[in-house]
Image (tube, rainbow, N blue to C red; front, side, top):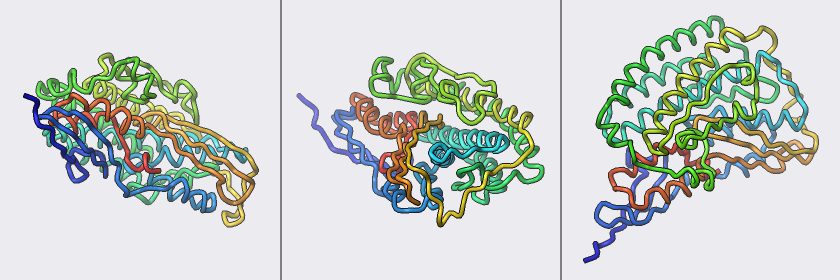
Length: 367
């Protein structure tokens, strides 16, 4: 006798759901038969908003496209504007940008540690990792004046230079996190329950990963060493030494291993920034923002966010506003195409666990 099929709505209030997403599930018993992603209507329409505002007025907007990791949006938009205008960025500003991007990556990964483990019922980890993330937010607050949204990277460089003693405080945080990661390993990676929940679950075939356009840790968890920082270096990543972690398996366990090693690589990058950052200006001043017009042109730039390849396509028609802005991120593929296919045949208890392993920002889909 065929089991009765039931429709179940998971989220957005569910603690295992990423942001304001909701998933409409059709289940037979506790097995998923069909999944449909609904991304909600919290943050949306960013691209059109930016086409109605002056160039500099768009910077408070772009960071909202991904709340857990806003800084790649600022850096991409700034770099696209600089490419259209031909504006140079001081060397010190480039090092500071890399510092901000890697701090943002670490903050995003710490939030991921908490979400991934919390969705499996391991609630000690989110208490630890979210608490440790606050130390990074303290540094961001000192540097930019804001804990979550920073509006710090903009065309021509960065908004202000580093506060006195900032690099020393950053170095002390890195020392703390290197020791703290050993606790994370014991709690998470040496935990037999987490291993059983993660190994063989949320599997992605290598061929499908390429076909669907999977990027970031999800792709590297399938064994592909792809990273924009290495493949097409930007800022000063070509002057820094770091590795691209990969893992075989294509499951949640492999993606977790990749993210754990990427956190260590971010620490390695930041230590080099502290040692190598030159003196000098941090800003090549733009004209009066109220009268600033870019020449006609277009640019597409991309970077490696914590969730994967992230790009901005910007078109200027020679006016004081963007003619077209298009944001390309991993969330649409990971949170819609990939998730809806992966959940079919999965157990109901693994839905949030699988979704958190993909790293999705719903506003990035609704952009």
